[in-house]
Amino acid sequence: MARGRKAGLMACSGMAVCLLVLAAGCGAKDDGKPAEPTASATKDDGAKKKRAAAERDALAAYRGMWEAQTKAYSTGSMKDVKLGEYTTGDAAAMIVEGFTYYQKTGIAFTGPPVISPKVTAVDVDSSVHTATISDCVDVTGIVVRRATGKPIAGAKEDDRRPWTAKATTAKDGKGGWRIVDYTIDKDRTC
Image (cartoon, rainbow, N blue to C red; front, side, top):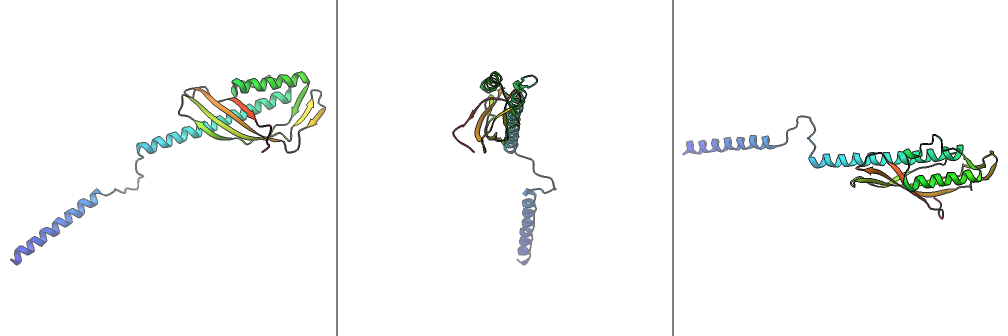
């Protein structure tokens, strides 16, 4: 009977070793390589990259709009301004309307505004991508002058106003970003 008990213990021990080996084989293999990303992680990363690119490109259109507007208003000419590369719709119309008014009244500007835009909303899931940009535009340092060069009035001290701009792309995000509309809150400072 001692022999049968010994054989049974050995069989149980052998079985336990086999189970341990199998269990170890089922564990994660650590070969120093990172785990492959899951499909959902890859999709999330792609969405984040798409959103970041949209924010970057919408801000570039906004900054380009300001560069074009500043050049037109300070030189008194729309030549080589490239307004159409950065604006369309109401935004372009308002800038041209302002330019025309300043031309007729003999007013020009010296100096750029100080801008610090931030994208506050972005939609890259729709067929037409959109972004909302908020800014506090500081025109304190701009000198308003007659076309002859004579200053007529300085901007008020601490003249900063909240601006909200809407940027969009053509269908399916093609054609680049353009500022399509903007509003100035003239009742508040920022």
